[in-house]
Amino acid sequence: MEKISLRDEVSQSSKALELIERALEMEEDEYFSKIAEARDKPNAKFLSHEEAWGL
Image (cartoon, rainbow, N blue to C red; front, side, top):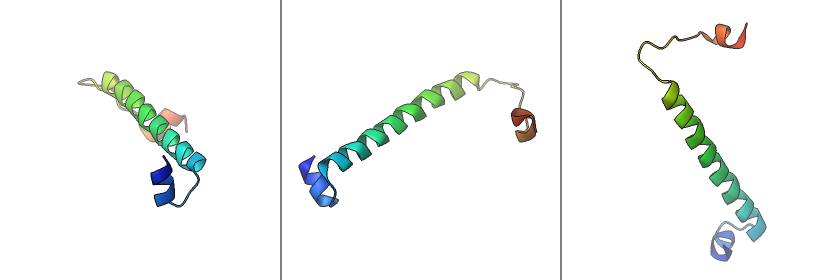
């Protein structure tokens, strides 16, 4: 942690926070990817943007 925080010229706590945020984003992406894959079926009904948001 010390080496990369020095390299990026930030505090160790700032670097730790950045890395934790990145990890959480990756976990979130994986979670939503699995949901999308489960919903991706042949002959699935597609909604327009307006239909999806009730516009």
